[in-house]
Length: 472
Image 1: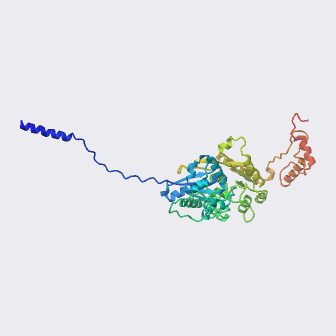
Image 2: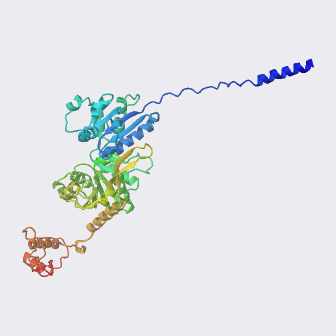
Image 3: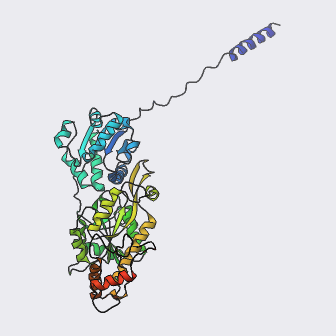
């Protein structure tokens, strides 16, 4: 009995032990996460055309310094993205690169958002002034804008290397260490160009040549010269290359190649000087059979003299100003009145013909960085049409004059039997002069003898005037 009681007591004690709640076993804790470092905020205030090269510079910076990925927040304020910019984000930038040419846009931004962008940023960061504007340097310095010649030279010379240098300068001003800022590389003002995509051993973004000899040697070495093929010159402003905005230009060059011709891309300013210096050889012979040109937007009648020396037709290429292809196609007027002046009328004064729209401005999202940019993009069908038109002009130039078909148009408005006139000018005498010149140049005008104003007037009043059934 005593033994049973002892055993019962022992079991009770054991049960009591097992009934106690278990204590949790301490687990090792992970180290506390370091606070996230806020990215350096960089805002560029400039024109749409600077966006592509600045984005390229940013991507090149990340390739050189992968440790900066996610540590730099790059944003743009331009006309095309004006309404997309958050004013709080803009005024909280650590550094602003301000092209002072766009001061009016800054004024509009401040008025629309009740801000003072320069003052707000200067209170905690830096504003770097580049470019040229209407206000004097002293006015910007009074506002606290940094006016540094190295930064200004980098911006003015443009190009990928210089824009990368400017971005490094801006980040250095915001406190980022270890970025070597180079001196500006001067831009080439006049020369030849060729895209290099897909060509082994060549730099990205195309190659420039300062003279014909080096350009010709390179194109022959890379299979771009085609003896006996039509030669198509393509004129453009250097800014297209130096702002990495060559998509439409490169599409034209590729289309010329696809249609079996030679492409001779040239750049410079003014257009007449560029064509004359780069497209005439040492014997005074043209290096091209036809020209396609984005040039001659800011020219005068003197450019026609240069084109006359070349004696080749030059087609006026139009890239839409600040508008997308959809905007243009849906427009009831085509080009705006503003574009009609500098895109059509002014080039015509220089001797250009057949204005042809080939490019538009489109907003695209860069998937690598998530940054939206506005750049020039080709309209494929129009690029094909422009090159076809150019090659037809080249073929026409090589055809004997006697085999060409011409149509002469003259005024007969308002319709009526006695309304052949043009602001009181002598239409018949003018037509006679034109016909006699054509006959002297070998055109088949249907008669051997010279034309007179009276004879022409008799012909057109008898059988070549616009007489409606209601005419008196």
